[in-house]
Length: 396
Image (tube, rainbow, N blue to C red; front, side, top):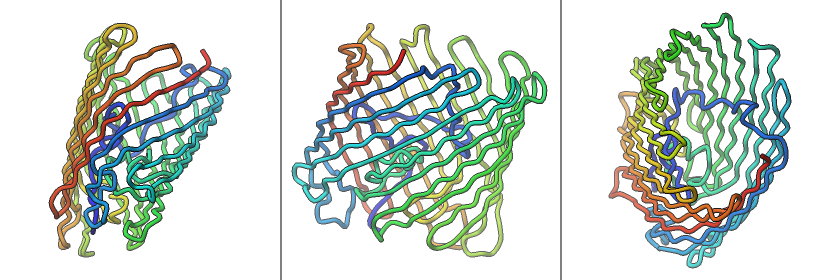
């Protein structure tokens, strides 16, 4: 294969100003839709102008333009509308734009994305959420692939993600939550394999005290690629603790049943995660540390992987208008089965950013990002330096 990929959730999300590294707890389901009270009512308008330089934007060893640096210009605009009521909300958004490469004109392209989400509370105890997103962009900029930490060449991909959840509080201390998620990736080149994942599960969440919550979750996952279809079952025991008014910690441990790649049986793969989030008063200092040992599909490779994922993020506000950030991450991925040709690859990402809020709705971002991936061959890497002008007007 002529490409490499890998990394934890959000490890590969290279924003123009900095890398954004986050832990997807129980990455099995993703995050729920935001609560209604956090969404103001009205229109949101945004515009973006980016000028950047990349040392290796193609990121493909077998491409004639590999290691050809290029300056790129990216323009985009978005619009969204939120309706918030006493029992829920409805949100609709769309974004589009284009990218021009100074020395790789045949790579010029447009991108579009859209998302719809909603939530409704039937009563004080029962609520339902739903979201649907679609993106047509280069693979390394796709939100779904970025969230999975997958570094791919400069090839176009259509990605969709659908999520739904139903929550019911049986008592004041016990809550049951059912979740459903479907991911699909369609690559526009024959060298990358299309793939999809359907995940369904249920969890019990028990409030032990004001600072501690215990959860037990079961999930069923079916993974489909052009080559085969596989099924997985997993169980996770998790604990969330509020250490102080400014710090929270999470930890989980469980196991996933995995089919052998040679069809000779199934094996039990241990999984788990740990995270620490620190936020000072007035959000002047933010620190996130995360580790995860998980099983998921390597979109584009058409195979399942077992990965060790670690990430770090530090953000510091310097006054009212300036924010600096540092990010780094590492991932080691390999086959989950046995009796097959080994698949092993590593990914490292790092970044630093500087943001200046010139006005309430206008910000200027400067950033550096680095990504490196090793897959059987000598490593691929890419340096990125960017300057971005962001405009966003949202309802208050």
